[in-house]
Image (cartoon, rainbow, N blue to C red; front, top):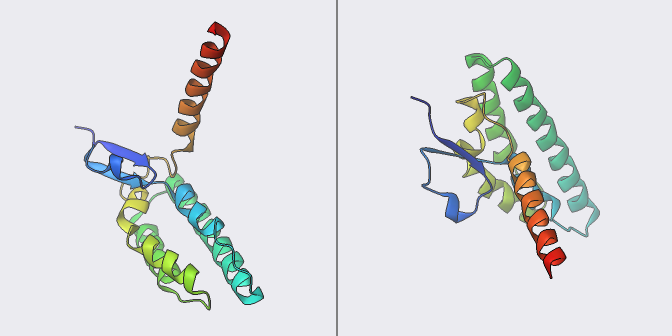
Length: 141
């Protein structure tokens, strides 16, 4: 029997629909992108963190190609190091803490390497369908 897995953003309406809920890492990173620090030290802290985030994301992509227990443990431990860290920027630390609380959902790919790391493809397909329907409605009017 195949496991039922849903990859989505963290919207509450998706919780409990299927057996497993995997959260989209790209959606998670968007929270960090929205930070707007003004102090140079805070700007650097966010930039450094986002660079670390994307390097970690690349490692997860490589894991999907060749999953193994050793790499799985390393990636899980690295997640803890990244998101347990503290910076000079309080708002960044708060976001890191929120992300850390979603570790199991964000790293579901370590248990199921064949699932996508993000759901942007399905979101794009839905957006295209909505745009097409709206275009048809406009043409009919």
